[in-house]
Amino acid sequence: MIVAYKYFKERKLKSVLIGQVHDEIIADVFPGELEIVRKILTYSLEEGGRKEYNRRFNGNFDFPLSSGFKAKDNW
Image (cartoon, rainbow, N blue to C red; front, side, top):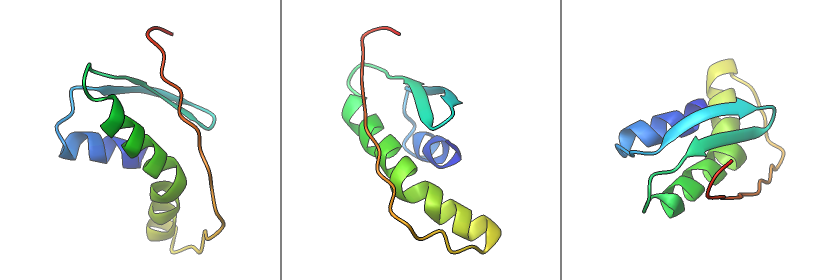
């Protein structure tokens, strides 16, 4: 979620991250930003988290991760 937050701020998105539940990130997506939010969250869960872990802990987190994305009008 930290990685996603950084990208949201860099791109000055109006969408906001609501929270994280286990391995899911919940966001309130501003109209017109769905595709960029999808790309950011997918990257954050699959690649960004691994890179952030390796950077912070000098680790070698190198196994593949996959994610899914679901968008609804209201949760």
